[in-house]
Image (cartoon, rainbow, N blue to C red; front, side, top):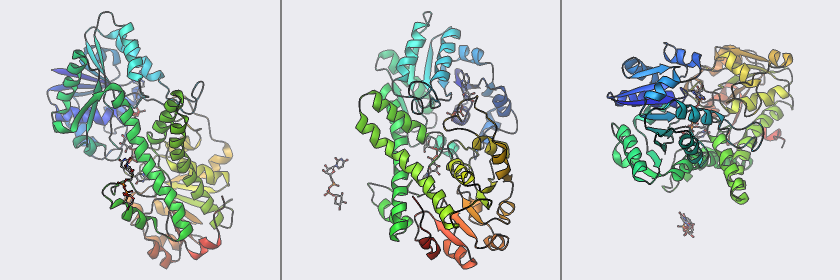
Length: 480
Ligand code: UDX
Ligand code: UDX
Ligand code: ADP
């Protein structure tokens, strides 16, 4: 029986290994992590991440050919194929701070693999890493190898959160990069055989190591760039009276452009886009390509601009002050169908409003209070580092309340911000909400989920990203 071990039981490692176990009953899969609480959660009825369909897969395989364990060394030493799916945060200190990937966790995983291995291993990079990480890992492994052969592969994961299970069942492609030596080719084939249990072979593409590593950064950069492009257009739409949804539709019908990923929003979030682009920028700078670096920097700048623009629009519409006003925040996760809040635009929007002394009442169907409070107390880039907690200032704590109901959150508020496109926000009883709010009652829809006309008829003043403005908003132009 082939044995797989995955180091890192996170958003990528957990679901990916669960699906490999489901699709390959002849393979034994162990997912290991240094976090005892995470492993306990994977072994319980309350999985550590919310992902539609995941629970069913885990329940089917757990204890049969899928195991979650903290005994990292045992499972690594027994495995034939080791996936490394540990976190690669942005460095907060030292060389490349704020841009470069922090490979501390990767390096310690590699040293541990070299330490405990007694047989040949295929080591697979699963987490996104800077180009040429494989080379560094290869060096660590071979210099500590004790006669054992290590083959390094890059097999970046393209799943998106909220749709992880269906993305894994039916991937657009599986990408495997490896050395072009006979041993390298053999390792590529071994990993290909795993995926071939359920992925059509023409969708499994093989490249050299560097192309595979770079393709992952490039794919995320292109996707984020599309969102920044449409978000930049949304500002122009508001200024001119065009409607961004109509523009996206018309543009996306060009088969060379395509219709997906053109939804204007308050900004993109998630653990990957910003981090990977910062990484790309850093690599370009290190390779003497400042023009290329500056090109990609602009994608992040527009994303930051979009969040600031949203806060400015809100404050200026509400007579230039939100001090002491209750603002309801509907949605805190970075997208719907996930409880993940890493880099969610809600953090920046909330911090902007708190800076203007607003009183926030936050509701998200999947994000617990503790997580929201922690997110609002962290500095940029600290979320992926284990030691980062600093208590929120007592005055900020007083400004934030987390509720478990959209009606409770909006009661007596002056304005509502919709920051995640949860389906339930489309179907709320907005008449009931309006009746219980202060007047004039505002809705700022950062995800274009509400029916603007219907809400205007109820009496709301409505702002939606990239849509023609209410007369009210035209009279109160957003300040730069
Ligand atoms: C373009 C638009 O495609 C068309 O829809 C619009 O109506 C007019 O402008 P055109 O300029 O005739 O059409 O040619 P196009 O095929 O778009 O190519 C434009 C330039 O981009 C060419 O120099 C082409 O060589 C270059 N190009 C195109 C690339 O360098 N790489 C590509 O992948 C595609
Ligand atoms: C992304 C990539 O899609 C995935 O391939 C990669 O493996 C990891 O990074 P993820 O971050 O989970 O996945 O979610 P994604 O669906 O890409 O959304 C990212 C952000 O962009 C979200 O905040 C989302 O709301 C936003 N978004 C997406 C838009 O604002 N508009 C869109 O049209 C699409
Ligand atoms: P991703 O979104 O890429 O899956 P996560 O942060 O969700 O990232 O998961 C990474 C996991 O890797 C964390 O649960 C962390 O505890 C684990 N991890 C980090 N370093 C090691 C290590 N050396 N050995 C085992 N697990 C590790």
